[in-house]
Amino acid sequence: MIVCTLTGTRAFLNRNLSSCSRRVRDLTYKTYVRPQLEYASTVWDPSTRKNVNQLEQVQRHAARYVTGNYNTNSSVTAMLRDLEWPTLEQRRHHSRLIMMYKIFNRLVDIDLPASLTRTSANTRGHSSQILEYSCSCNAYASSFYPHTSRDWNALSADPLFCQSVDSFKNYLCSLTHHLITVFSSHVILEPWHTQPLCTSL
Image (cartoon, rainbow, N blue to C red; front, side):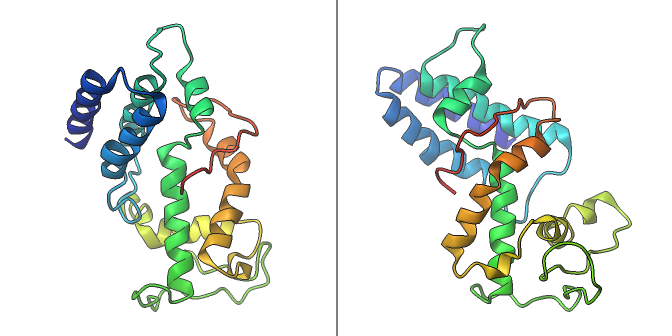
């Protein structure tokens, strides 16, 4: 439903703003379309590849709208790279980790659940790793705490060493190249190498 609605919104913007500058078209996408694609995405992060791809397709069509390039032989991936737009999946990944950072540091009014405890075992990785959830179904495994605890533990450095939310965001941006490598096996993505994509988290 949301994909159909936002496809219509993007088409409306294209009909009425196609003669505007690229900067204006970029701003309208980030104002009227992307916030709805990411509404409550911290806790609602689609787990099926079908749903992930449907959301990404909205942004890929928007890249053509913003660049004004509708040539079917043109690479949308190159347009996204030129626009410096991270994938929506990457943005949701960052958003979940940022929320976990805020919860750990009591920057939001959300109590740490009793099940979310640091591991006492001497394991590889950073010192703020947490016990991962044992999940019996995919829906639960894809929910916020089980999903994000795995991503939290996979970080290469201790996230709690970051002194502020902004410094943690910068740390996540520095990992963008690694995240792209991880996500590049998905059908709709291509490797973007070292392009800086964290322009607006």
